[in-house]
Length: 175
Ligand code: FES
Image (cartoon, rainbow, N blue to C red; front, side, top):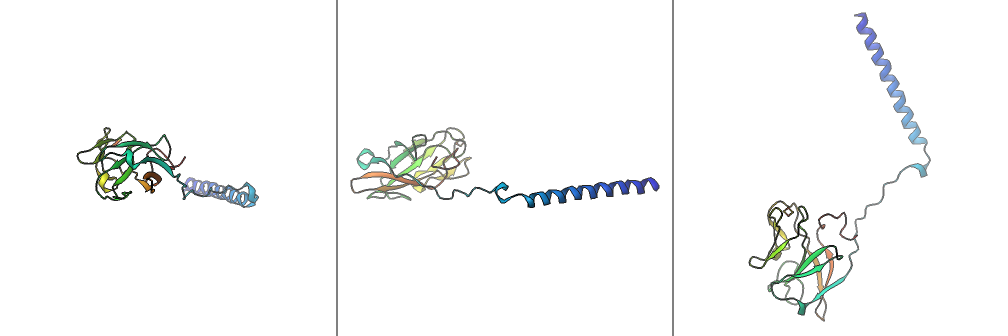
């Protein structure tokens, strides 16, 4: 019993010593000058997208992919003239869309299937519907395909001015 009491006593002393160290740490943190304290960097919530001319309507053939890069040349993508008004479609017929062609799952390059108007991944077979805003219709990816925000001017020039999802492998779409 006596041994047990001694152990309890030792435990209590160690606990109190630990508390004293913790109190000293708090006091030091409070005593630091304001400049020495680390401030969290403000989040970059707003991304400034470039307005890039990607093509002219005359360059686009119905249901044939036209290779582009946006927002920079290291971000491959495609323009499609689908021949019917679709979600996110631009131009006089509302049928021009653009997508990143990097799979959002693990970054494989996507291939266009003109028969069902989908972009398909050879990596793990995810499929994305180009008539439905790049919605994933099958596979491993956990997000839809990034779609371009497009504008067509009165000369028929097609500009990309934004993206609605994060491009695979980037912390920000604009580097
Ligand atoms: Fe496309 Fe995995 S990389 S499904």
